[in-house]
Length: 338
Image (tube, rainbow, N blue to C red; front, top):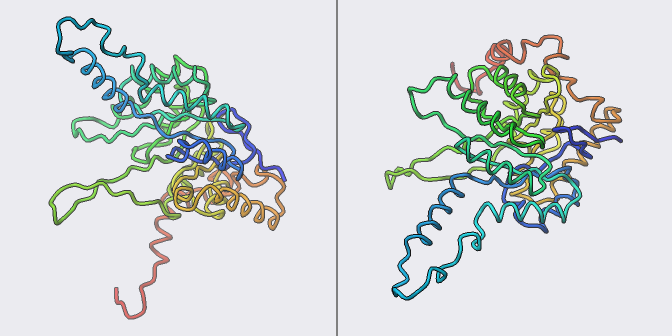
C-alpha cells in the first residue's frame, strides 16, 4: 500500500503531520511521534513579540544597570551575545530535531512586522529547517482598515520572506477573508509553496463574575474539519504546484479520510495528540489503511480529490446549494412545533 504524498516539494511517507504545538519542544516526544508514523513535524511557533520583548528587556538590563561602584569596569556585566534568548533557543532546537529525526522538520514563525519576519526566517533557514510555516495570526480590529489592506498585509509579508529564503514556505490562513480562493491564488503567485487551512483563532472569553476577559483554551472537535474540507474541495486542482494542508479538528481516521477525499495533500494533527498522546498517529494511520483496503485503493493518489469540486456531479453543493439543502432537510424534535 502506497501512502506517500508530496507536500511543499517534500516527499512524505504518509499524509499525517503533527502541527505546531508544545509536543515538538521535547525531543523524546518528537521521536515518539516519528516512531508512531508522523511523516513530518511542524515545530511550535516562534512569536516575534516574545523575541522583541526579550531583546528589549535584556538591552535595558545591560545598558541601564548601575553596578554601584565607579571603579567597576564595563566588563562587569555580561555581554549580550552570551545570553541565549528565545530565538537562539529555537534555532538550537531545530538543529537538535534534525539530528534526532529522519522526517522533515518544518519551523513555524508567527510575526507582525516585515523586518522581524525576514530576519527570523533567514536564521531559521540557516539552522537547517526543511521548510517554514508562516503562521499569520492577525485580527483586523481597526474598523478603518479595508479587506484589501488586510490581504496585502499577508501578501507583502510573504513576498518579503520569499525574497530572502530558498526553503519551501507554507502560509497558514484563517477563513476570515471575503474571497479566499483569490487570496490563495495571489499567495501562490507571491511565492507560497502551500497553504494550511485554517488557522484556529482562539477567542477571548468573559468572566461574568469578575467582569473581565479571561483566556480559555478549548480543544478542537471533529465538526471543525468541515470548513477546511469545503475550501480544500473548492481549491483542489485549480492552482498548479500549490500544496494543500488541512488543519483543525482532525481526531479520527474518518476525519482524515474526508479531507483526503476533498483533495488535501496532508492532514495536520494537534488537539488529539495533546489529549491522547503520540500513539494516536498510528491509530489514525491504521484506520486510513483499513478503509483503503475495504475500498480497494492501493495508494493515496487513487482517491485524493475524488469528492472535490472538480469531481462531484454538482459542484454547487460546496457553495449555496449545500446551504439550501441542509435547511430543507431539517426536522424538529418530537413535541417541538416550528
